[in-house]
Image 1 (spheres, one colour):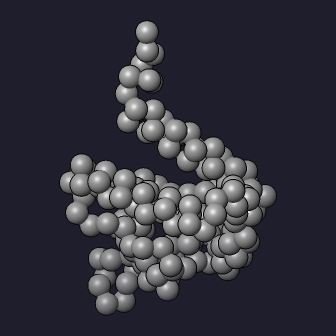
Image 2 (cartoon, helix red, strand yellow):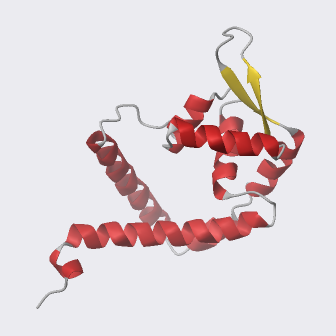
Length: 157
């Protein structure tokens, strides 16, 4: 008799994808802990850097596929920790911009080493990396369609 995982290959693939992602996330979190930041905080700093420090909380949410209230809570913690500042936009008074502080910039610079991710991904050839990226983008895009999210997150630089 087949067990439940054998009976549903899609579920098995989804669980494997989750396990791989969760394990890599934990390895990255362990690496970043030496700099006093989390994976989520490093991701916010990455977005702020990538957008030229004109990021808004809603733009950060789109990039990271997070609910706005989750991003807001994260930004509040990061502001308390001195990593970012929220500033009123000079052109649109009701809009906030997120900028890195000097402490945030130092944390971002340290976080760019990404040694744990490089070690994990090094087992893949260049062709396998391209295939994996293509497949993951397709899966992500289909999941976004399922959620009726029409705007895809911006491509990573």
